[in-house]
Image 1: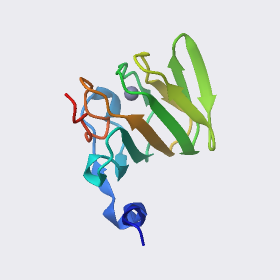
Image 2: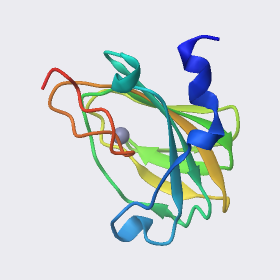
Image 3: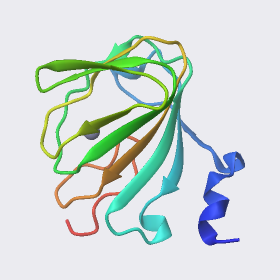
Length: 136
Ligand SMILES: [Zn+2]
């Protein structure tokens, strides 16, 4: 078994309840899958489960990191760069570097998605709180 096989074991699930207005009514579980602790230099991957997902959030931010969101369960609308994208299971949303994003409306009470992003100098940690770039 390779070292990464351990990381898909749900028994290691980390639970966090995000602070802040937009997240008050939602329960967020973050499962770290890949990051600095696994010797990744640029790539960060975590699984987010929101149950209940709440209505959404207005958490507008931008970062040098490229970020992709791959939907596993649920449906949501992501608005950025003047367009709204409705996505569901098997679909991916890509936020290019330095594009303001994350105005989000959840259309189902449960959401499950992968967040795949790079770690870049000067960026805040990921939404799960992990993985500052090592090149600050
Ligand atoms: Zn982001």
